[in-house]
Amino acid sequence: MRRSILILALLAMVAGIYACASKKNPPPSIAANQPPKPPPPLPNVHTATLKVATGAKIVARTVLPEGFAPISAFAPIWLQNGSQIALVGTKSDRTFVVVFDSATLKNPRIVATDFGPATPGGSIVDVAASPDGLTLAIAVAAPVDNQLDLVLHDAIAPGEGSRIASFPGQFDAVSISWLDSHTVAVALRARAMPAAQAGTLPAGAPAEKPAPERGGGLFIVDTTGLGAVKQLPIKCPLSHLTWSPNSRFAISNGDPQTPPVLIDRSKNFCAVLHSKEPIRVLGWSPGSDSFLYATPVARTIGTFRYELATGTSALIAVASSAAAFTSTGEALALGNQDLSWQRVAKAPEAPVLSELATFRPQLAEVRIVPLGIRTIPALLAESQLVYTTVTDSAAIDILAPGRPAPLRELIAYLLPPRTAFLLASGPARGNVLMSWSPDGKEVAVLDGDAKTAVLTIFSPAAELLSPPPPPEAAQPPGTPAARKRPPRPAPTHDTP
Image (cartoon, rainbow, N blue to C red; front, side, top):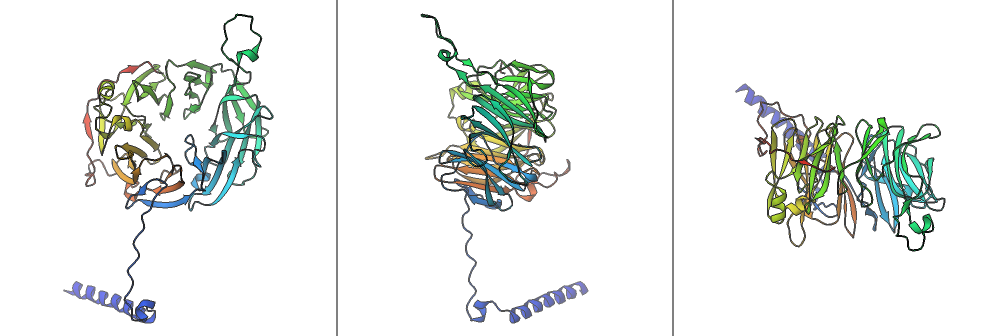
């Protein structure tokens, strides 16, 4: 009884305070004896091509200049511990590198552009950020000088940058990667000369294959001091490189002119991998002992795990290239457990339910989480996944059948509680490029079509990033339970 009287007294006191406040500072509509106006309805928020889901939190959003087209090879690049974000795109047939403040996506500044102040004699061919995000390395092809320049830009003290190394010649493939905060690896494949330029052929002699120019190879550049350059005795043909976490191994993906290649930097060793097609490295394991890759197989695509110790590949997912390693070394893959090469070839338009699987090859256990999105193998193969081991979160781009165009759903997914959160959805138009912030709490989405491009930074729901519940705790309502089953034997594959 006494407690009830105290609660009533407190309520009366609060009501009295608000009544006094309203008498002292009445809103204009009340002072004029007008009923208060209802709040305006919340407008629909869109990215360039998608509608933002209800409840999805947007940190910042900006519409890029008309005609700016993202380059699919470059997802948004986070700089300076996540306080800045860089975009690489083209406008009026010129490549631009533009940096924004990530908190507001304001104060844009152009860091470099083809034949601009920082690169007066050449065009941008590759861009990479240092592990600490304090420096951008830009490879600039300078045809007039017949060389390739490596230029560094400071994220803290912006300027025109400094050229720290040059490589004579012209190149068909250029790949730059940071091995640590002061070391850049530069992989070059020299441009092939027509046989007619390599020498005069005798009359009636068969045509020869184009001969490569001299000057390609793998170079290690020390960015401190004057930029010392060391060439490694690697003789394999190179394309885009993906380095292991310990910076010892690298995989050259291959392209129509060159096969995939494995490089061991500590032994100055390289070997051509046995693959009939180029591959795309999806990620290295935390221990640098294996990697995931995708490659075309039987008129679709497949994801495989390659073990360095045995030199063998095992199948991870059919009709999918959306996979990653978690912070504990498990493989996470988007797909469907019932898909096979035969089923995809026989019924490529048959509906399937999208699923996420997590597993370790050494353990006879696979955890399956259905995402509830019905799609078909052909569209499942075009889906993508971007992962951060900091919070064990994934940003997933899933395509599903729709009319007149396929539908796209962007989902944020946190592994430990197995919880998914819709970020945006709509017709699939143009490209979607995604990357996680260094702290793993925000995801940048750059999408666009022929009309416009928009950069949007999402912060997934707070419950997604909260600590996982203890093992005995019940899962949140509506969370699909993982299903455990013995895995089918993972067939070996002759690629790489």
